Length: 521
Image (tube, rainbow, N blue to C red):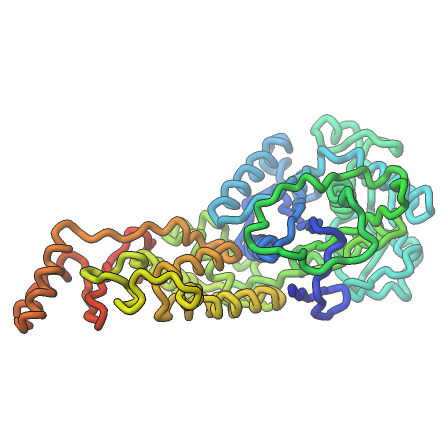
């Protein structure tokens, strides 16, 4: 049973979906620069959430927006003296390339703000019509005093604020909540530069917060078969069900009339983002969405904590903002960064250092080398379980080979609010266990459906040319009591990059160096 910490209730709650297909919305990047490692920590946490849902048997409809029009983008395009589309396309392409390097499963949809202006205008019209918003000098603002529950997510207090106080910038502090812009007036010049769009209120552009409300509701409408009650884990669900198609799911226009059955909830199952988006972004999303629909916007809010660098928040002043390219330039692979993210719970701060990344790379390399030995690590044996099990396929043998207790502990950890540090610890204990290697390999790949560390790509290690003959010759010498000769062959094997461990079942070999590894110090 999956339990998630809901930031809305500040409690650990059993996850219950509206339907068998989970609607998941994740706040995507603002494509004006390369994504830094702090954002990547959030995106990896969201990937693990999605993988866990599928591991538990749910189908997932995942939508992640791309913000391709906002204050930062306009400023950067002017500074670089390039067209906005050239700027945003460049960094969107870089985002998708890095996404693949980190082994993050792509979302089902990546709506872009500039392509969804119509949906935003429709939502603003509805807010104006019901009195939740007002027009001022060509711009449209949301009146936070009209939404009685404003602050229920972030704890922002609107008591004592000056009536009509407005803010046009997208980001501001929680201790200064104000009416925020839904539509910002612009001029003809901005429209020519593709920075503004036509609207009933004149030329302008949307505020940042309205973008996510419109795109999430448009692309995550109700499942085609609505349910009046929430659902626990699907019956008969297993990890293999993650590959099922989404035929039963279709999106609808959330601004159209209610369904004939009158049960269109317009509620999203899970909304995620970084904790820095809690206010004002997520708070404002709730206010404008629920004011427009009269329905609960999101059931579960999940927020990922900050990534620190050498104990400090990332800032241009400290020159400690790193990208995936910076990681690679220093000789590390992206999956080492993903692995490093797993050393802390997603709701805990994580301190990034180059030393910790090196340790993560070394640890990942070591496990890969171990996995590369599995399935064929022993020479001259008839069966890895010993002769008493040879040829048997009984239920007891199958149970013994299943690593089921480790798989159970792993599932328990990931279903406990995505406790990945514990899950990784379970995986490593399983890898060091005495189970047959092919059974451990099977369990490892199952666990990696959640972790996404790419163990399926680990290539089995092969003996260097002539090594097998030397190992067999050494075994004959040991059997004949010629231990001096056996030691001399051991030295020859070391020169070939092989270490031999003698066990009662026979010799086990391990490569000293592995081509699957990136730099290790």
